[in-house]
Image (tube, rainbow, N blue to C red; front, side, top):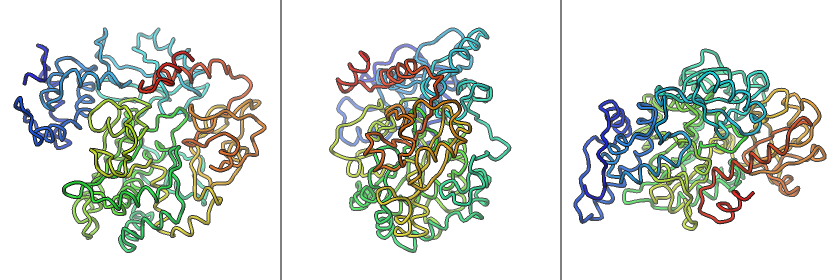
Length: 541
């Protein structure tokens, strides 16, 4: 294969076995594809069909060896017919992949969050871990902002040859906790999106069905695909990831497309929440995974999609574990696969792990990443509704948006539209962190003021100086904004944004110079480098 330009490095037997197993698990066979010098269209198509295995293969190599070894890259290149330089280029794009062999590369690497609100606790923890001989990596936001406290320090993610492991109060657990998570609003009867969180076993399909699970899917089948789309449009559901695009318009556009040669269309869940301060989707996926699986299935039915993909950030091992379990149990019970729930609808879901890249939260960058390329955004148009994942019609939504579909289908679009405000209907999840008494994920019906939302979390600790709304890409507001309603229209009128639902409070002990420098540093590091204002401006800033 002269086009691959392999080096003399070879994978160890263990590396090769791990890579082959990872590819087999996603349906990529172990036979090496050999292409002639003249690549016909069919040959290129077959090669592209395999390239989407690149991220799983790199994860397997990293887990087995502790780094992306040249020999391992060569084996992946042979398996997927991807030039080693391109495979290395993809690996070097992500925070989680180690492309340089360092002394003690077999040891665990402790990722320490240095973004707000972990920033004030990070340096002391880094010094302590370094003194203990640990390999420390300064990490951007790990999506655990509610766990950062003076008592426990910043969020941690421990990455080793066994994957992520539990290693302290704020590390990300990879094994199953034995107790239900204690949701701050656990006993609030008004909860809709978080109604199951902390109340039912997230690993049990029977518990989910017993709590009313899969009634929405049955109702969707009764309504029919076209009517489901109309109910979502009538509800006025706007995207909850930051862009606030009308979900009904997106679904209607995908439903109108004929798809690929065999009618292929996709639903993609953007679960790569990497905006500093955001962790609401992690709350959902860890504690109510079946709701998300049901909602994705309804989205697939409504749009005529043939497959669903969940692209989840690599620093979420427990959420990944819970979702994979939910998919397997749903498939075994007939809620996924062929002829779902004795209907004529065929649909299945596959999970794909990211590897630490903020830019992959942008939908087209996510498509590139999932397909096995660097996570760099594509030009628009064309838009995902016509040319999305694998260049096919795709509906892409984040978990919170999809969860709202369940009450819309069950109660009707008009009932949903009657909740909230005229410009912001339905329920909203907010991520409260920083200097509040009880950080966490909180659910409200659109309309309460910033003061009321802060009070849900026990109020501000100390004297409030500022609140960061929408995450690092959002805006700071002062105490004079406490009576501003947290709706899309009110924040827009005030020159702010709800973004991904971040509400990060800062008191008068905050070093705002350090916070602002870190935000600038975050965007310098995470820039995809395609546009001059960001590529050059963020560095100069």
